[in-house]
Length: 104
Image (cartoon, rainbow, N blue to C red):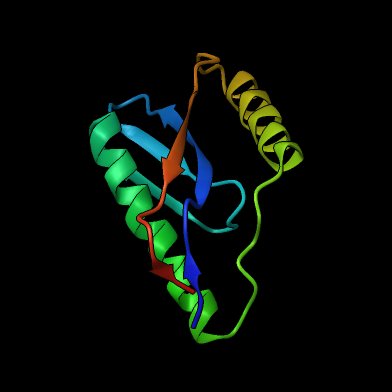
């Protein structure tokens, strides 16, 4: 079992019309969460990221790496969808750093 140090992922927060935020990690397909506040959303997505990493480890699958292209394309798609839905073109990105020593 190896150890990860300083693994970082970009997450994207979208404000919901009825309050709160949806949040996801573009580098990890299917990694989504939500929260009532930005802080709660970030806490929840960290848990989701760690669960996906555990699943990858258990299945002996490679942990996907983040690239600028992945994040850029996801932002483009989100803004396009929000425009089509008549929603404000407002999103936030945050960098999530995982705890040192997360096993893979």
